[in-house]
Length: 174
Image 1: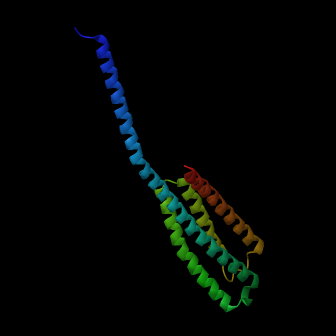
Image 2: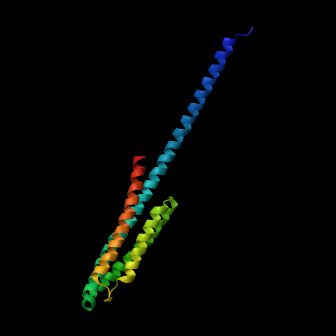
Image 3: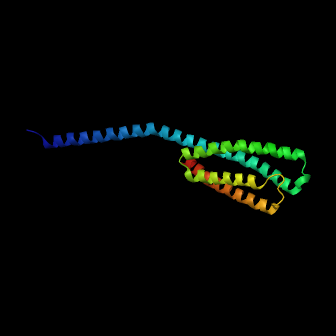
């Protein structure tokens, strides 16, 4: 005759064994995924750092450009040719850095960071607007107007870095 207790023990043992096997398999899969997730997170951090560097370069060159542009409007026709040449050189540098800013926007879109990319695009557009409004020989713009435009640019820069910093901190703490 069959022993119902024996079958119950065997049934329970099989269920426990299968449960342990499934749990072990899930743990193994999770451990294999962890390096991929960690690599992905590290790659994302690297890309955000690259974006920050590129935007930082634009910030630096724009600061030089805006100082020279303000100086040119202040001195008008009396502004020395050497300073005009320097402004032309810095303007070329700024155009070159704008290419990197476009690359940074692409990286942000690739990462799915649409809000961050939009903020960066607005920041870049405001710098471009500044370049169109403030130039050598322009006499009908006041220094206060220039300072106001520059203040708006700095606010957009601050918004961009606030969002970037939040994203970066969240990745580091994950």
